[in-house]
Image: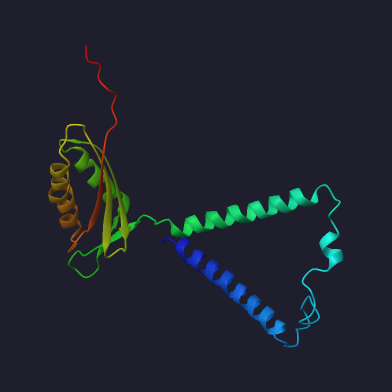
Length: 194
């Protein structure tokens, strides 16, 4: 069982709660509420950084490179976290109804490999890459088919949907298996005409 998504959501929720609590405390003190004992400043008219604090490290040669490096690291980590949150993960396993009430688990990679192998064996398809998305009980297919230069895209798409996709849906016992298919052409060198 994968727990990466759960941990990610918990960390994101904790960071959000911390920022909301901090922003609410700053707003409350700014509107005149008495600051708590652990508060950094004495009241609503206190500045965030005094002039002495702002100019303390101005003459140190390491100060600005350190600030820029820290901010750059913070931005890179935030972008990494954002891309990790937006990236859609593959489906690790499917739940297959075996008819006895217990069910079985089918590895997602196994179904992806079977779909890609059957699709690549079709005429006109040079390579196929398949990824499963969605939920265990309602998977979806995302396929990238690279066609030979002389292949007909409509025929390759029809062969994929009526062949490999239908076989996968029936073998997994699924009522439906929606698919998003992207077609491309295999790049080849130009032939020299003499």
